[in-house]
Length: 222
Image (tube, rainbow, N blue to C red; front, side, top):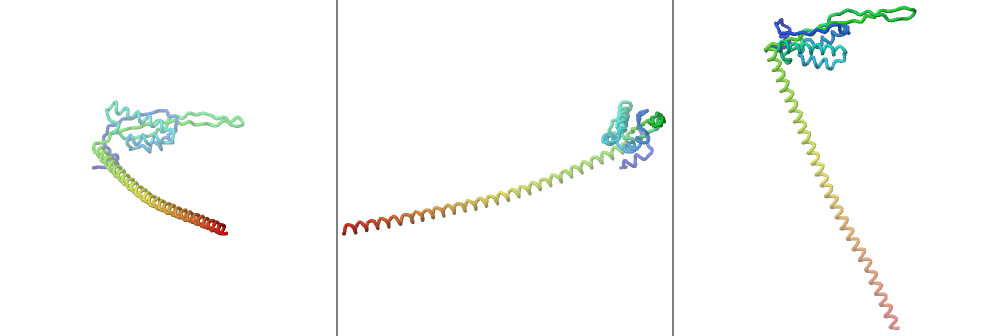
């Protein structure tokens, strides 16, 4: 199975469609770096790059690319999934000459550049489409495998967390049992102390009664 990069470099007769935008108020020097980024890329990838580009000319290039895709679909019946950017270039257009007033009655010239943008989209061959589909399937399997590994890691982390929670709950139960036992022992000790205090209080009352009886017996004897 031939690689996509190798097949694109060959001179193959392809169905192609182009779109041209003329007199764009941007210099060709500023447009060429953006065009170099999308050359030989699929239509979807080129649209992504243009959507997230920070250069103002990327919006015009994106409109030109969409026009070429529409021409390929309407005129040649080629689906957009089978298209890629085979050629894209910027030609210099006419220069608008203006003047800016300066000090002492002088004037300096201003050159406002323009350019003509051309984007050509072509159709992949059957071998290239098969290689792209195989690459997409491999990428999907790889993503599924990575997602499965992430799920396994998540399950392991959840199990570890549940084990930690169970150990913490068991420790808390043991501590609660120990606290309850200590409270029960303290309550028993308090009851014993109260009984002893009651017994100590009762003993002096009996002695007082005996002393009173002895005093009464002495008075009767006298």
